Length: 117
Length: 109
Image (cartoon, each protein chain N blue to C red):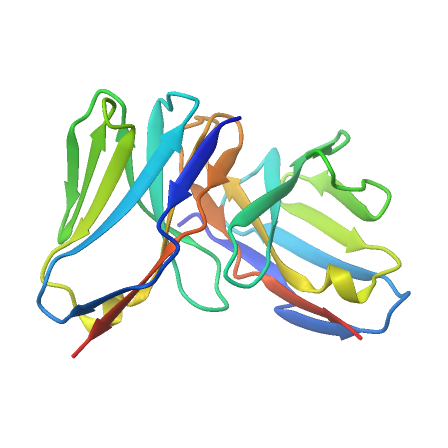
């Protein structure tokens, strides 16, 4: 149980275009989802916390107008990278907890490899 | 600022040996630490959680310890196998989880 599905698994786009990444909790409801970014051989860096029915909370240094997050239902959060540039190329991973406890482990999607040309 | 650090160098061991990975934290006292496994191009998978009042936790060939004096958690894999080769992440936090850079483990036959 507690499966998080992420789509697409990889995407290549041209500089200046926008890309949408979907994150779904398949067998549980997630009022909160987390978006991370990971550069090669680097740690997972939290970008934002997605809250169902309300605005996302962004980490310091993450541009909210560039990384648009929508959490319209209890099972779906989307991250849209707007006006993508080569420096946005990275591995984007979403996650969620299946319970409300802070000790509850995060269930991660399998990530989206974004390449901006 | 709060920091969680792992030895980012790869750890190479022979099959059958015990792998020991280290996670150190500074400038805060986490109530718990979580360990995850990440394979290349995949999302992390949860392995174990250990609370600050627990000295040790085990799950099959895995063992985690938590030393609040040393501000350190050790992650052990006994009787390691090539299939254990992956990057192992240590994380802590409350509403959000912060991770170390991870340690890549390579188990050779």
